[in-house]
Image (tube, rainbow, N blue to C red; front, side, top):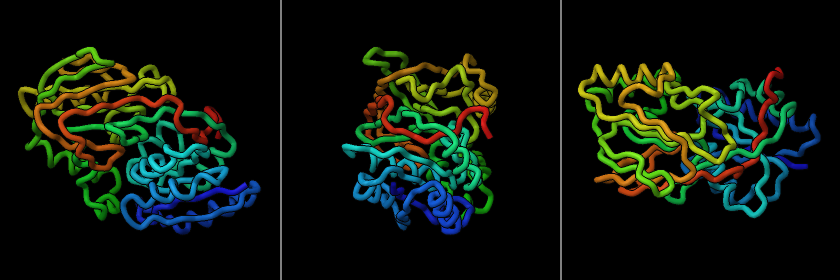
Length: 299
């Protein structure tokens, strides 16, 4: 058996080249041969996965959520897609938290190989895959505007700092939102997210009752334009406290949601900027990718 390691040496704060040596040793102990491909610029992980991953028994992605996004986009078009092990080495690692993965490489490898394989849903926005979240508006821009050097220096706090700077300039977008072709709502929104994750940006957390990573549904959340900045702060405080019935918050579950906006707006897909246009179609692709995940309750 052979494994392909796709590693982003620039992700997060860790020395990922040293981590690759840990991965190689762990794979050898489990009877795997190992090939490594490092990324150097945008889209490298996607191109590597598309060109090379088809012949492997396992693909290991070492990097942040953006590296995983590219890897999944590369794998999605393959006739035979190998299972994926994700070793989180980014700044927020939201998807890893949903899977219960450690940021310590040795521990994560142990949890994965003593765990199980499970097919999980992914999303597709206007033809582009995403692993766990597509979002727009307040705090979404900070995911791709925050400088890399700042993320390396202070980690997750960099996103919060950038988001705080956005607050005085927060704007809303008028749009109509349709669930499976039926209109759900229309209004002015400062934030929206379509996700398959228990955590978004380290600030929005869902409970276990709201999220199932393999149920064929996304969670769709919208935040209406508040009357004042203080009101916006109260709304995001409610989100942090999982009060999804708070006035100004809309939450529903959908397998196919469409957004019709009055203007072109930028979206964030797993932290990477995308400009899909005025109309955005997002569908859930059920059981699309098989992941190695820890067994619950095992350490």
